[in-house]
Length: 378
View 1 (spheres, helix red, strand yellow):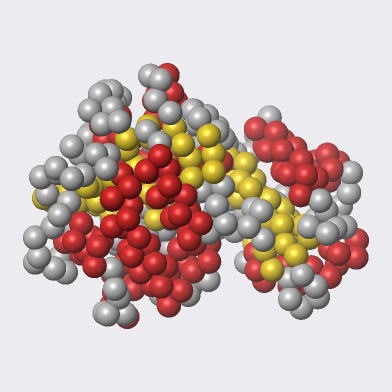
View 2 (cartoon, one colour):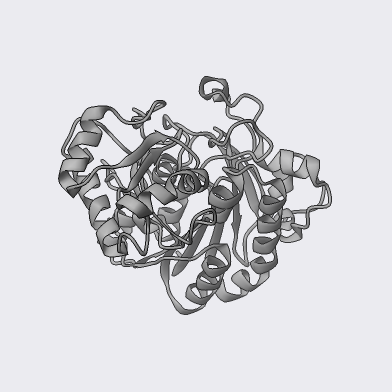
């Protein structure tokens, strides 16, 4: 049994198209492989030592960890579906998405709740739509509502026009509206921004309001057994805080890595981390070089993370793909890599796992608890 388990989700670092990727329009997507093809000098020696390149057959060195990749049982390819399955909740029916914006009845209901009109109501890039509609928003105070290929209801507002507390309240109202209605939405997301005409920029005050998992997930099970659950990044939000002892929002990967190192050194229990920049800043924007740089930044921190973890178990994984070389700006349905390490581990290949839930089963097993879904990798 372990006193400490650290799971780090590299948001969107997929490792090859799933067998049913064509059903999602993602045939041939491969986030990590395509980055390596275009950047063969990518400097990720520590993840390579743990077995990352072994998964794709790109090295014959002796690994230091256990490595494998996992298939996905859930329907969908977004963060909430991926994280939920990692922690033991399989989503059999996908959340609703809206290719042409939200129906008039949904927008009308939301406008009635907040007492003002909205603008936008379309599928859009968040960075693009605030440039296009930001001036109108500043002039009228009407929030910008938009969605994407994911199941999200996103509300953008200028922090000097709509105070953060008000924006967050609007998001609470929207979350309750969907929870009490017939339309299943994965996440309501607050998207605050600042700046002036022509140079609006989003801030780190984003906040996600996720649907509640239907089944009992790993964080809840651990809490019931008296084990603390520490969230870093958006993991708390994705589970609506259920089962978490504390949450620690981050301003980006660098902040998330720093908090991860500190908590790995100071705390026992389950530390559940999401590093979001791969997805939010680079994958959706198809920024190959930014994505690669972020991978190198994390890789440099791995030795310090290991040192801080001591006798604990480290698991590095992902939640879906977002191939920066692929068409469009959507997530891509891919296998996820799984790397395991502790100082006495017997390294080797754990094959192709049937479900992301093997990560959660491994976490429970590390604390001496039997899982009802998934199979422990250790």
